[in-house]
Length: 113
Length: 301
Image (spheres, each protein chain N blue to C red):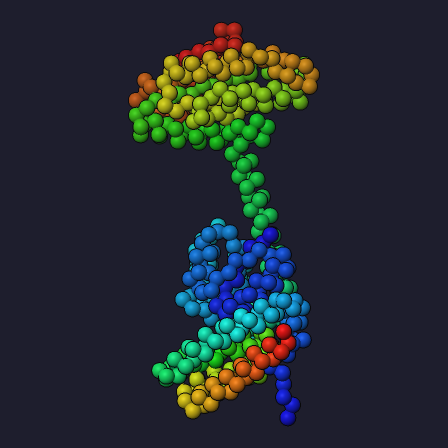
């Protein structure tokens, strides 16, 4: 199984107009946003607020897609579905995957710097 | 530069849109939710809007409906940002009055092209608004002297009469025309005649009070409205006008010309009501008396 990079760098660069420093700015912005969304997710999970989980999953799916963060995009989509189905086990499981993939992204970005 | 509102709650998408639009030469203003978006629109300087469909506080559809329902001073071209494959959103969007839509994640070139279409429409609107302004000016002002035209000065007279009655203060009028203007035209030509008219108009404006109104009534006839003014004061103003024209020759491309004017004054001060017809007729009659008396003088009636 081919392990994809957390970010499809060439695709992301092309998508935002080939400006490397701007891409860096956006990735930093993504990381910041993700961390605040993660807090909201944990809160929503504690309250069993599935509608909120679905919404956050949906938002993360969108922002991941913007930066060609394909694995994160897919996992966010899974989270959105789990929220929609009110499947607490699936939500918990997906959250774990999300965390792992996020750490992978941060590592990838630090290595590139 | 066309000003575009970007209403998008996701900070990254917003940032990307801002950068793209600025790179393409648009001026951008951002809003993070529908309420902010509406507040920006009310400022009246937005020409195009990119509205995310789903936003907190007021969604894209609600903002668009508000834009279409309120009679804003200019048309705003609205592009909706939708999620791919949500056909019902697209239908709702058009029902709410959007001009176009693009689905996220959007293709950059496609976005640029769709914005370009909006730009064409906005430019068309700007041309229309400019023409409207020019037409309105033509309807109100005399193109040669830039004084009010006959229609407008008579409308203003009506207003001033109503005001005079309301405030129980008199309004006076002065009818005047250039003496022997026909001779000036015949001797020097119409072009020089125009130069004289322009100079006369300019000198009159300089000696009148800030709230007096002057219009070009006919070819070489002018009409002045003096609010809050009785007959004695009107005479003073008329004298000032007479001297302004006769005391200094008018410089034209054919040399210096001595011009004079004959003036007639009327006032509402002894009338029961201020009447447009009375004032116009009476100051006109008074002006004719000035002509018969030998011109270059003021008559009161």
